[in-house]
Length: 169
Image (cartoon, rainbow, N blue to C red; front, top):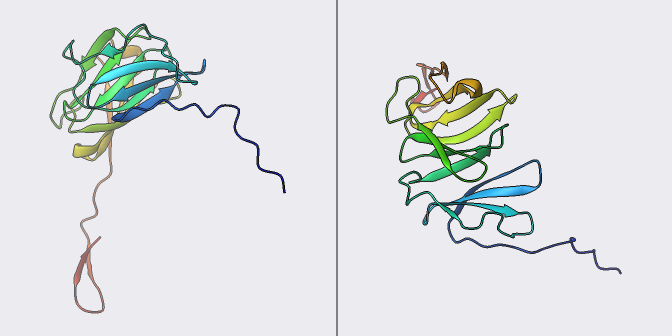
């Protein structure tokens, strides 16, 4: 019996504290680490593509990176759960902007986690602590922007099971 063929490359790059990554369409990755709070741009074979890691901590930018997404203009957005904000970096790793702060109003966050680009026009942010999704126009990120807040109302309904236990639905 013939052994299955191995993948073309199985090279692995290890980070003890890797928390997030996103892939560029050109075949390279941006990874975020939590303990040293770095962004790293690497090839899919693991070779570094920036001369040095972008140590955002020294710039006072990244505190708790949670997720990374590549924007249509090749900039990099990072959700920061404990800082309640989104940080944006250029494709070269330079910090461009930071928006959001702790709160429940539109444009504010309570532990933003997931981020994604929708139809190359909007940045969608999962605002976990506020139990909502906020949608930001990518065209307006560098200036004031409109925020669409999508919330799912929690049902205020109770029922009893066969043992007369109250079940909140």
